Amino acid sequence: MSPVMRDSPVMGALRAAVVPLGACCAALALLTVYTATGAAGDPPPRIEVVDARIIAPMGARSTAAYFEIRNTGSSPDTLQYADSPDLGISIIRRTVRRTGTGRTEPARAVDIPAGGTVLMAPGGLGVVILDPPALKPGQSVRYKLWFRYSGKVGVRVPVTTRPR
Image 1 (tube, rainbow, N blue to C red):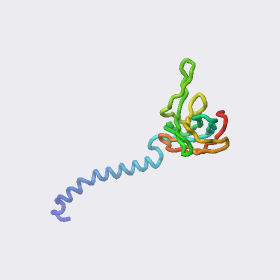
Image 2: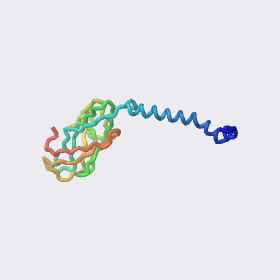
Image 3: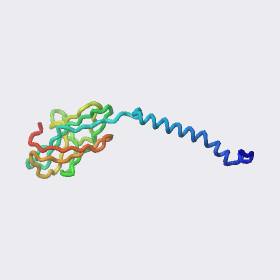
C-alpha cells in the first residue's frame, strides 16, 4: 500500500470504524446465542381454559359464563377481558361481600399465578353477558379470553342450565 493511501482520510475513517463495528458484531453474536438457548427473559406462561360453561338465560336481561383458567407455565399472566362474537357485551366481574351482603363489581384484570388455577363460579368471579341472545342447553358458543402475555385464547363454551 502506498504511503499516500495509508494517510488518506478514508483509511483513517475505516480504521476508526473497525473497533466499534467489531464490538457490535460480537455483541450481536452473543445475544443471538443467549436467546437461542432459551436463557433470555422469563419463561412464558402457558394458559389452558377448561370447564367452561354459559348459563342459559331464562328470560333475564343478563346471564353469566364461567371458566377454569390454568397456568401451567412458570410465569404469571393476567386475564384482561373476555368477549364472544356470538353474544352481547361481556364484562368480567367479581362478587364482593361487605357486612354480610354481596354485590358485583367489574374486575379490571384477573391475575393468573404461575403454576396456578383461577376458578370462576357463582358468588365469586365470572363473566356477565348483557342482553344475551336466546341460548339453549347443549348449544356451543365461541369465546375469546384475552391475556396480557398469552394473547387470545379461544374456547368453545357449552350452554347449560346449572352453574355447578
